Amino acid sequence: TSTSTSTSTSTCCRRGLTANSFTRQVRGASVVVDIRQRRSCVCALGMGEPSSSSSSSSSSHLLLSELLSYEVFLLDQFGVLHDGVAPFPRARDLCRTLAVDHGKTLVILSNSSRRSHLTFSRLEKMGFDPKWFAGCVTSGDVAHLVLNAQREGQEEEQELLKDTYEDERYEGLWKDVKLPSGPSSSSPSSSSWKEEDVLRCLHLTWSSRGVDQDGFKASQSEDLVGMPRVKVCSSPEDANCILIHGTEAITTLSKAEGGDEDDDEEEVGKESIMEVVPLEEDAIEALLSVCADRTLPMLVANPDLVTVSGNNLVKMPGSLARRYKEMGVPEEKIHLLGKPSDVIYEVARKLFFPSVRKEGVVAVGDSLEHDILGAEQFGIDSVFITSGIHGDDLHKKGEDGVLCEQAMHNLLEKHGVNPTMHSKHFE
Image (cartoon, rainbow, N blue to C red; front, top):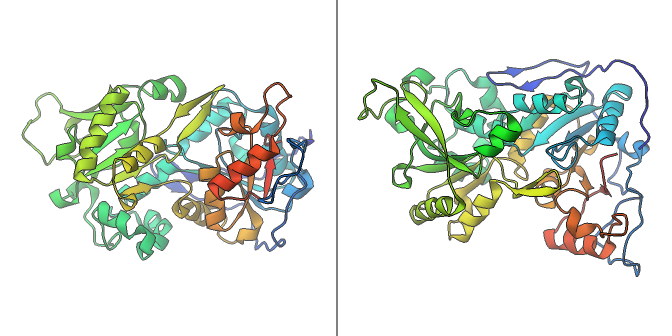
């Protein structure tokens, strides 16, 4: 897409989930959008049989005119805006064009286990202006919402999850976090949790990846800040659930100097010290095996299987969820708190585009299993970026990265999805 060099100022306001609260800013009047019937782009490839040609020479660029028929863009990060290390300059240009020159609403919808306020810190360092984006929702945010749903004074957070309380698809989730009937307005305050309100979690997180790429200190567990219900434990025998933020380490809890080692009533962070301890893959496998024997529920704050990191693919928390299922744990005990689950889309909708019809919303992502499937299940259009995690399967090496049409057909059929459009890059 050719992008404008206009110097007009963006009218977008950054709003969304922050470390301690929700901030709301209104960018003009609400708009109801009913743009068109579902359509296909010239660069889209449907589920029909591939042509006799072995590869597709369709453009790697999206048509700006086609994109402008949407009002809201739900953008994945890794593989769409950047590769985990460096930005994609043309994606950056397109974001600016959509937001500044055309007033579109851009929302980051990410299966990052980190909270959303950290997303913009990363993007800003890569040259993305936070003002271009209406806000961000991460799967880490959803985990935080779910685990804080019973707290007194969390009415806004509870409202964001309201649709899940009586939805039978989420009945198991509320049961497993010990809130079988959904959050109650008469819940105790965070300073007076009773023993039955505490969730003892075996917590897996990041270590070196968090330090090297996200700027976190390995000695702290940022994931659990502001989660008074959660009490970490080092042994599967003591846990009543598993909380997955990363794949490299376990969070352990030790008493602060002078603390009572036998006091089980202490909240996380009150008289305790959390420490992130790196683990080898076989040690994590052993922990999961014991948890599987007990059929402990698993909450997954990042459902992705892999993500791009420069030229490499890195294993993500969703891979542990898949392994847990392979160990015989029923699927209903494994709760994915991000894409493709509807819950993350509903939170984004309520925060950033409550009056926009689904026909005016498009999701952009590089994962068929998460971004594209999630969009289809939520009832919105999608743009599949083919150079991301599926790039090696779809683009022929030595032929300038030409898309292989047969490979595309096979992959779409394997995942049972049909994106509205596809493009090699978001540009």
